[in-house]
Length: 589
Ligand SMILES: *[C@@H]1O[C@H](CO)[C@@H](O)[C@H](O)[C@H]1NC(C)=O
Ligand SMILES: *[C@@H]1O[C@H](CO)[C@@H](O)[C@H](O)[C@H]1NC(C)=O
Ligand SMILES: *[C@@H]1O[C@H](CO)[C@@H](O)[C@H](O)[C@H]1NC(C)=O
Ligand SMILES: *[C@@H]1O[C@H](CO)[C@@H](O)[C@H](O)[C@H]1NC(C)=O
Ligand SMILES: *[C@@H]1O[C@H](CO)[C@@H](O)[C@H](O)[C@H]1NC(C)=O
Ligand SMILES: *[C@@H]1O[C@H](CO)[C@@H](O)[C@H](O)[C@H]1NC(C)=O
Ligand SMILES: *[C@@H]1O[C@H](CO)[C@@H](O)[C@H](O)[C@H]1NC(C)=O
Image: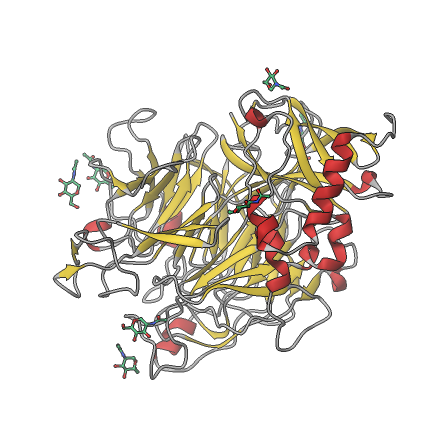
């Protein structure tokens, strides 16, 4: 342990910790971290965390805790798709073919509509600034309805497909510090229509686009550089998992495993795909119970990967979890106004086992169209959705307002699920959620109607944005919350595979730093209850040193290779006794 003298930097930490308890907007806007090497990290200057005192009191609180905050009554667009970018802005979009949204484009920026109106001067996409809680309209040229996406190694959103004139499109969105960056639509097309496909960034930086309606194939972006001219690869598994008249295999769940193969789940089946050789490496047993893919929409996450020292065995154990869904036929029944109870069960499978089996567990309630997000603490939050029906227009009822938390490492299986405080806003079909850099969850959307409809319907189109603060952001835990002060090692904010680097962080007096973990969270492209590309890596800790009363330094190993962590931007969290700091962005290359 280093000397415990009260240094100037400790005072800084103390002031910072005190500032966390001072909810004045003055402090919030003006406070900036004192990074010792500003070139190495991107540190946001304004934090949602500080606004927690403004969170509304829930109507019916439960012991599990958590708080909801209404960020915006209306952003003018229903948040069907969401992607957080490394500049702490969230790109949000809906579809273009239903008429006018409630957000006007800048003067003169109209476009021809795909269907509903000849000229459309409303926005169907926007950029939400997390730090300032403001937003501006974006101009998307063609229909992005039910599309997919992934952020590439440079931090650019690559968005693929949609409907109508947009169904073969590839669009880019590059974050920009200044100016008015907007969507760029490429001339190059996808090889086939991709509507309800899923995307995943691969270790070599390419993005794989899998499936879609009547698209029993996958392809890559960029294409042609790595494989032949016709970049479409047939994938019969998707045809086999399509139910007649109902599908139940759209938006397949994709998880890139640390062995480099792609886990693909559709309907009730799952396989491990060697996408480079178009070979099914293995097939897993079907999940018991209900169907899990759109429109019997469940959700899925690969549980946190716990990394060993560089060169260790990182594929030793990997668990995939699938939760919720609906019985086959639920969609067809819902079309006739009969809403089946949604699946209560989750399945968890150790995909690295030689003879894996689904271990089934029950959520506190049934759920269809739930979002599953990995929290920086390593827990899973399940939120949004309904307890009856399926995905699809007018196809669900009985919204589930309480999120639940799942603790994968809790040995007592009866204690893994905890119910959290409810929101007041139903989030049904076409809603979304994503993790934010302060550890809260951004929640928006819900439009179970063909067009925007605010009157005479049970579940009106939702244009609001909320944030959910998981229990760890509660005031009762603020004394446990670390704060990152600087990062040492990465040159120009870029860390290399296997590199050892150090994070200095502040923490209140008398804390037990042996109970710290350091995690990296990849931001997800979320739509239709699936958070594409999300992964949480628990880094290997070499050691933790105490530098002074309030200052610590933790030395960690960066992920060993690109199978474990595809290149790109990750949120780096120091988590102390389950309480995460506000993250900083780290680029892995
Ligand atoms: C904080 O910012 C406000 C405006 O954003 C400015 O008027 C004020 O002087 C700043 N205060 C400090 C202490 O820098
Ligand atoms: C959206 O715009 C319509 C038409 O102007 C209006 O009736 C409705 O109240 C607006 N909805 C919201 C949530 O702002
Ligand atoms: C891409 O598709 C559009 C129609 O969706 C077509 O007009 C255009 O020519 C295609 N571009 C290329 C490069 O093939
Ligand atoms: C490329 O693959 C698609 C989908 O399998 C097929 O429809 C198309 O005919 C192929 N094109 C060529 C030039 O082989
Ligand atoms: C890593 O672990 C897996 C699963 O336990 C095992 O099959 C594999 O042989 C191990 N690899 C090494 C290099 O130890
Ligand atoms: C909203 O839905 C109701 C009930 O189906 C319908 O009567 C009404 O016309 C719809 N409004 C709009 C604007 O589509
Ligand atoms: C900042 O980091 C860079 C790259 O790691 C290093 O070369 C430089 O000396 C550091 N500067 C300070 C003030 O620590």
